[in-house]
Image (tube, rainbow, N blue to C red; front, side, top):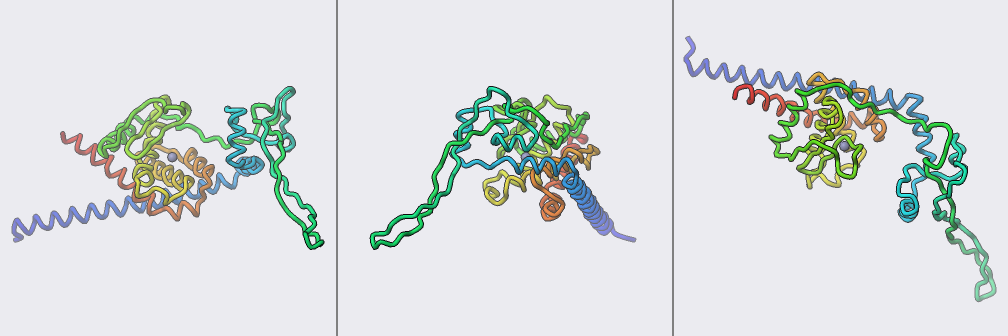
Length: 298
Ligand SMILES: [Zn+2]
């Protein structure tokens, strides 16, 4: 007959084994989910809408800092800016009576110069001449191709409450309301504080909160700064949010896959981040479940 101590040991061993099995199963499920998301992202990238969107984005110039300041000072509301002919190529016309925004375009030049010894030499240089560009709001015509990133339009009150508890358990200052200076933003976070825009359905709020929790874990701590690009940070945070939401039965695949594609992500970059995504998603899922379990006992 087994002693009491022995049977206790067996129970503990069984429990540990069960936890390990559960963790393994969860990791396998997360891997599958990330793979499904990776495929969905590549499907978005292969779509005609996305290609048309990229083509148009490519025709918008990256302006120098100086020119960006000139654009901003003359038209603070400017969002997408291009020259007269560039707009025509995109199927749009500058509206009658609109004044252009003046910027400086570099113009390389070459000139012959006499050297003191009588020879001549070619000198190359750069001058700047004023050119005029127009904001999209000053043009009419074909709508620009856009990739619609739909709001998660369902309620998920319980998941939102669970994730709010996770934020509090992690000593993150969580507030709900409009984001200052960015009324259209869904949420924001900055090393220890998260704001979630509460004017959207609770499913969207839960997705946003999971995304910001991921940023808090992966990106905003001082030691992490400068070790990733913004594109990578968005890819990782959105993937974590996708995995967490899916675990709790909320489907955000359409939104997440388009969001990631718009931030330049693809299946390959997602797979490269798999370990970081899986680890962070797991810790949020574990915390959400243990906070709720503690609450049920209390
Ligand atoms: Zn983000």
